[in-house]
Image 1 (spheres, helix red, strand yellow):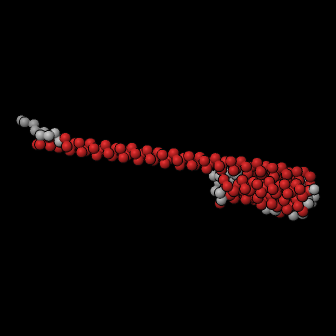
Image 2 (tube, helix red, strand yellow):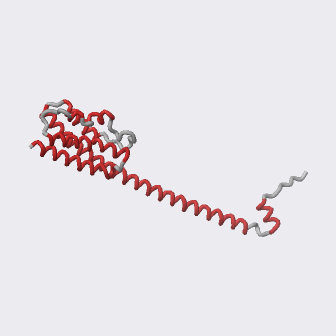
Image 3 (cartoon, helix red, strand yellow):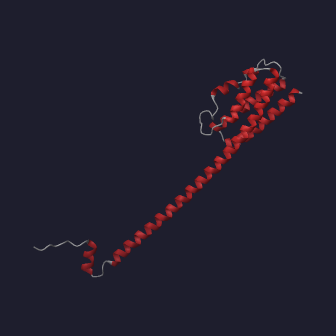
Length: 187
């Protein structure tokens, strides 16, 4: 009994033509090398693009963190002024107003697309109702308080519908101006 094995195609080509199929194998090897080179180049491009995206995201996050820090500092300053008014007038409502102003800067959350990190109760406190019939305040102080509340409420809105990295520093500047105007209004 004779066992005949069927030769593999490359062996068959070698056997029939006597050149070992080197031309075909060389062409296949060249194609594989070109494909591997192209795949490596594409992987390198993808890594470079991903690194650029990561860098741009990190820069954006740093700008946002800086803007949120500026807003928090300004809200803290404004809250301090409102607390001074609350202590002077003995107003519990103004004390709540001061806490709400502080929350608008302190509690900002860039991940909260609904409220910007600020609880809805803060919106009610800063609605301005606290300012109606508040004894012991000058007209200028009342106007400054209204401005402080409106500006503080705008801060979380930049998170949900704006450009907080640009808008928060601008709002912080206006909040500082409103506090300065309120301090001048007492005199």
